[in-house]
Image (cartoon, rainbow, N blue to C red; front, side, top):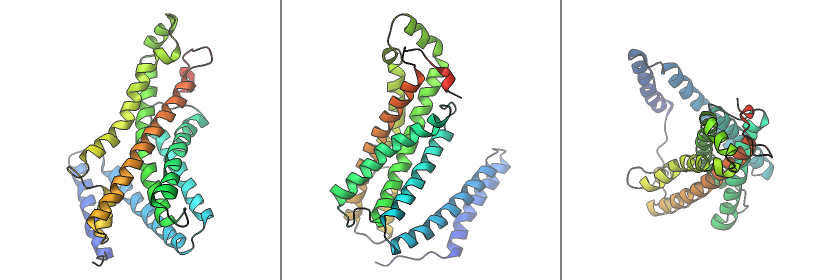
Length: 263
């Protein structure tokens, strides 16, 4: 089964729907028309650029190029995590916490999948490494951003309750424990819902893309199952690491709440 090639006109017709959506936003005074058009333009430029870059990397396979792309993706994801928080850690902690958590979780899970499960040769084959890392980073980024935002908001809004519990003799881990757990749950809910709905409510993107590209449906399903397991593990590990680092930053060595580290 051959792949149907899309023409520029096909993309223009699809873009017309987004323009129509922006027009309706303007008509109903939603105030989203500018953001819709900017996001659509940014998405188009970014995808075209990465398409050109990947074409070059696929033609000249080298570990250094794959590492460079992976680091760029990681830093961009770390910035998005920081930007999505209403109250975030000051200084390098704001960027470093989410970035470090994603590095430990997403990178380790991706390398494990490439070396042990898929067994690509070489292990850093960009055809597999970059798409898999991208899917893991994208989902882990969302989970970590939600979890950290929930945690810092809880610390700010319930600071009086936390300090009272500390004054009563509770340790920081106990006084802040339920908020930590709720933050972890918040970060992991999206991937849990995605796994529960996959195949019934929605057809995940990787599976759909492989089917459209002509892969046998069952082979596409196997790859999608693997990716969903990897995303769940990467997101869960990343959320737990990020919450642990953020919680430690919010308290000093004497278990005193430090809201001055937030901005």
